[in-house]
Image (cartoon, rainbow, N blue to C red; front, top):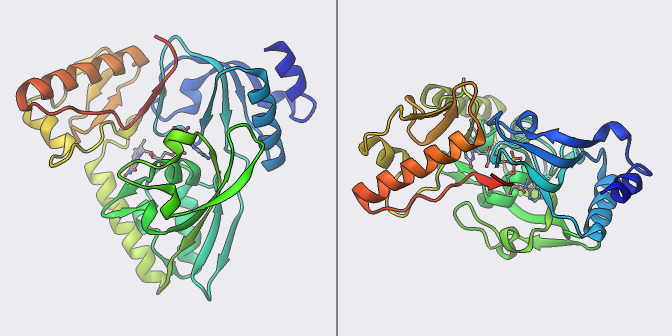
Length: 305
Ligand SMILES: Cc1cc2nc3c(=O)[nH]c(=O)nc-3n(C[C@H](O)[C@H](O)[C@H](O)COP(=O)(O)OP(=O)(O)OC[C@H]3O[C@@H](n4cnc5c(N)ncnc54)[C@H](O)[C@@H]3O)c2cc1C
């Protein structure tokens, strides 16, 4: 680890190489353990350098976007977490062809607002999802009938070891419900190309406002969480199953099944990652017992107990 840190310091400012980094500060759950090392490259060259050197070191590593779909267990992460924000913040817009290229560190809210300002529609569904473009392209984030795969035409990637840059078409990304080929390859999104549609900006902003008002009405946005905790099981809605199982408000330590939206597990203040994971198991067991349905977490849970 020491050798790696010294190598990284050749290219990256010390303040962006953090030992024993508290991951609660970098995840929307505001809970969980520490990473042995957190590296925050400030531009693409630094990201590439970090990937190469970390891969060479043989240490475990994990890519973090905006941390809105990740829980790091209380025992922490043995290895290196590489945070892709704040590097890769570029956006370019081609109004004539209704295309946009967005780098992976850009927040979805910013990308959607930029599209609307440039009179391009199609990102409204994503404007309230608190993730980065990279995280959203990785897992095909979606809401209100839209998914990233509906607007992505191509994805620019860098291999996990930082050695190879390449492009995949939307088809080659093998997108499915909260799934892409990157779950297998582990490669990293650098930018995405989007096909949008020209439209009246007032109407685009109106649609965005309507969806975000709906989101704020229905979701416990006032509490830390990672959004819908479970994937939608085929033929059901996770939140409805949890509600019907009588689990609304079920609490374990500082973790709670949200009163407002049963699909959310929230941190009521002092939840540990273990509280959240235990509550997840309680919910899974109860739903399995009552409806014989397996709930699979959408949230990525990493690290040690
Ligand atoms: C209040 C709230 C509401 C939410 N609503 C929705 C919703 O409506 N729809 C929805 O789909 N999600 C929703 N989410 C979950 C989350 O915002 C999305 O899944 C989002 O796409 C995650 O992006 P991120 O940058 O935060 O990724 P992270 O949480 O940092 O990472 C998620 C996964 O993506 C990988 N990843 C991140 N960046 C990259 C990259 N550049 N290249 C390759 N892999 C990468 C990580 O390794 C990890 O496996 C919500 C979350 C919250 C807290």
